[in-house]
Amino acid sequence: MPEPKQPEKLIDDKGLRIDGRRLDELRPIKLEVGVLDKADGSAYIEQGKNKILAAVYGPREAHPKHIAMPERAVIRCRYHMAPFSVDERKSPAPSRREMELSKVIRESLEPVVLTDLYPRTTIDVFVEVLQSDGGSRCAGITAASLALADAGIPMREMVAACAVGKIQGKLALDLSDAEDKYGEADIPVALVPNAGLVTLLQMDGHLTLSEFEHGFSMALDACKTLHGMQRDALKKKYATMREAPEEREEAEVVA
Amino acid sequence: MVLVAEPKQVVAPGELLAEGDHLLGDNAYRLGTKIFSDSIGILEIDGNRVFVVPLKGGYIPRAGDLVAGRIVDIGLSGWSVDIRAPYEAMLPASETPGPRGPRRRDLSTSFDVGDMVLAEILAFDRTRDPLLTVKGPGLGKVASGRVVEISAAKIPRLIGRKGSMISMLKKETDCQITVGQNGVVLVWGKSPDAERVAVEAIYMVEREAHTRGLTDRIRDMISRSKMVEQVAGTQTA
Image 1 (cartoon, each protein chain N blue to C red):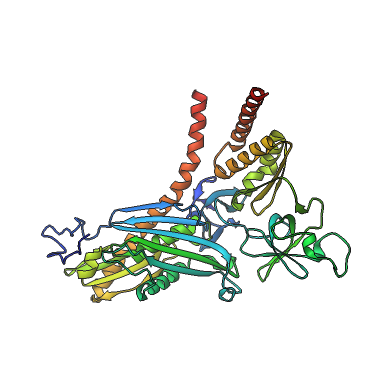
Image 2 (cartoon, rainbow over the protein chains, first blue to last red):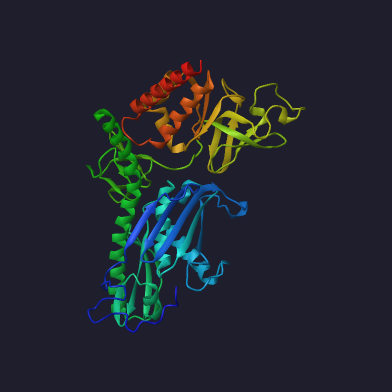
C-alpha cells in the first residue's frame, strides 16, 4: 500500500468526503460475535478499513496475586496494533500511544462491568488491531464491550464509542485516517446509553464551544446507533442457534 | 407493572425487561423504576420475579454445590483442587473420611496430583477460597468412568425442569451420570458404546441448550444412535 498523500480536498464540491460519505455518516460497520474458540468471549469489528479483534478472558484467578483487589475484580486491558496494521511496519513492542489507549479503553469499560461480583479475580480484555484506519480506539471499545457481553460477564450495558471531528472547517462524524491526520480536530466519545454516562471523552485540535457542543451531540447520536448494532450482533449469534435445530426438525417431519 | 420484553426471549445486557415494582431476580438490575438485564440470556418470569438465565459464563462456587475437580497440588494438611472456578479450592485432610488426629502417612496415598475427585463445597464467601469436603455418600476419588466438561452455564439445562432432562438421559442411555455444578459431568456406562452415546447427548445439550423441544430431540438422537449400534453389532457378529 502506498503512503497516503495529503488529499487536495477532504470535502468535495458536492459536500462529500474522500470516501464518498456525507458529513454525518458513519463508515460501513460489520460486527461479529464469538469468533474465537479459546477466549471466553470475543468479537470482531470492521469499521471502514479498520479490522479489530477483541478477546475477553475471565473472571479468572489473578496472577500475579498482588494485583488482586479484595472487594472486586480487576480489569486489565491491552490495546495492541499488529506490525502489519499500518503502512510502515509498526514495532510490535507496546508504544506510548498503545499504553495510553489501553488505559482509556479500560477506563471506558470499567463503569459498566459489575466487578464487585467477582472479588480477587481479573478480567482480561485484549484489543488487537489487525488493520488500522483511524478511530481504532472507538472501534476497539465497541468490539471489547461486545466481547465482554459474549463472555457472559454481568455488565450494566454495552459501551458504544464513536469519534467526531472537524475537517475543512466543518464537523464530520467518524473520521477516517486521512481525515484525522489532515483535519483540524478529533473527539473520541464513548457512551453508556441507558445510564447516560460518557466514559471516554478526549480531544485534540481546536474547536469553538458551539462547535464542540454540536459535534458532541453528533457523536452521542452515532453511539446510540452503534449500540443498537451491537445488540443486534450479540443476539444474532444466539438467534441463529435457536432457530437452526427447529428448522431441521420441521424438515424431518416433511421428509 | 409493565412487562416490556417477552418471556423466553433472548435479551442482551442493558436491555429493558420491565417497568414498575417487580421483584429482582438473578442477572437483573434496577435503574429508577426500570429493570434491565445484566447478561446475555433468556428472560424468565416467575410470578412477580423477573430474572435472566444466562447463556454464557463461568462457574462461581456456592456452598452446598456438588463439583468435580482435579487435584493440582498437595500441601501439608490438604489438597488444592481445580474446580474450574476463578478460585482454587482447598480440600483439607480433615475433610476426608478416616480416623481423626494428625496424619502420619503421605497425603498422596489418598489423592495424588491429577486425580479427579467428586466433592461438595463446604463453605465459600467473598473473602476466602472455597473449602471442599469428600465426606458423604458417593464423594471421593473418581477412579473410572468418563469425564465430560461443558460450560457451567448449561448445567441447569442438562438437569432440566425438576430433573427431567437428566433422568431421561440416565434412562435412555442406561448410564449412571453425575452432574457437577461446575460443568464437569461424570458418566459410567455398561459398555464404551453406551458411554459414547451419553457423552454425545451431553454435548448436544450444551450446544442447543437454549432451543425449544430439546428433551424430545435428545431422546430421538439417543434411540437413533442405539439403532445404528445394533446394526453395526449384528454385522460384526
